[in-house]
Image (tube, rainbow, N blue to C red):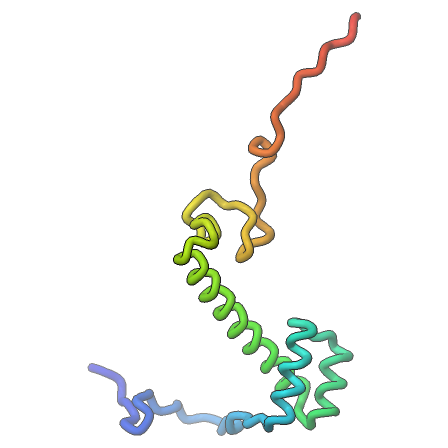
Length: 128
């Protein structure tokens, strides 16, 4: 048996419960300021979030949520651009996990084992 579907939006109807707030519609001025701040820094400090909240007339939660959503969009755009560059032969396949884990633009915290970087050296032993 399939779940009931709302024909208007082609989605399931919401369960009964407390009413949710309507989706926030940001003004052009608010979006311009948020985007400008995002270009400067992808993550906000608490004090910067408070400052933006007061300046834009939004709650701190709205600011925080906007930045979380914007980072997700930014990461998807970055991944898409890198895949296009890979298809054009500008980057090797290992960036997308087709090779052993290595440093890449998408995973800067991965590392190459030291054995791949350094060759062990045997030092001459000192006389007894």
